[in-house]
Image 1: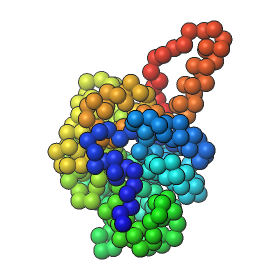
Image 2: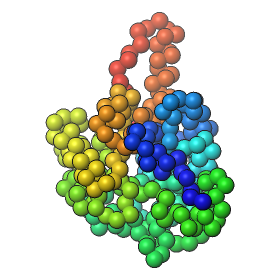
Image 3: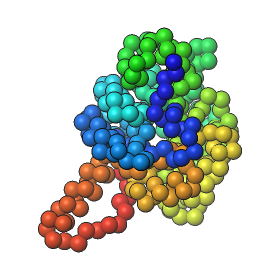
Image 4: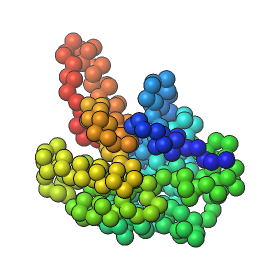
Length: 270
C-alpha cells in the first residue's frame, strides 16, 4: 500500500495544486481554512507549515501535521534551515514533505535529499514512531517501504547563487522540485519585485524545473497573483497566508459595517 498523500496524488495530475501558508501554531486555524474550502472544485491539496518565519516550532509539528492530514491535505513543513536534525524532526512528526530555504547550489540540494532519505539512499536516522499517524490507515511497515519515494522534497530558490545554479540544482536525483521565494529573490538580486528582471528570474527557474522534469512551486500573497502563476504553468501555488486571510477579512467586514467603501486592491506581503 502506497502512502497516497494528497500532494503526491495532486502532482500526478496536470492541474495546478493549490495550497496556503500556515504561520500560526493552531490546528483549529488549519482545519477551519481547509474545511471551509472542502467542497470547492479546487480544494487545497497541501499546506505549508512555516517553521522558518511563522510562529511555529517543532513542538507544534505533530499536532499540525495530523490536523492538516485529517482534512485531506498534505502538510509540507518548511524547516528554519536545511539542517539534518531539523529535517529529521519534521519527518518523524509526520510531514508529507520538506521545504528548505536558501538553496544556493546543487551540493546544498543533494544534502537536503540525503537528509530526507533512509540509508542506503540517504542518512535519515530511523525512529518514525509517530510519522505514520498523519497517513491514515498506513502501517509502520508500509511507511518504511514507501517514505523515501513518496515524501516530497523541495528546496527554495531565492538567492543569486540559487538562481545561477538552478539548472544544476533541479538535476539532483531525488529532488521533487523547487519553490520560489519571490520576496527574498527580489531582495537578494537587488531588483524590483514584479519588475522585468525579477520576472525573468522567475521564468528561468520555472523553465529549468520543467526541462528537468521536476515540479515548480511559488509563494503568492493573493488570489490575483496566484491565478497568474497558475496560468504561467506552476505546479504548486499558494494563494495566501492564514494571517493574510484574517487581516483582509476583518478589514473588509469592518469597512462594510462602518459604511466605508471596500478596497478590493490585492493584498501584498505575508
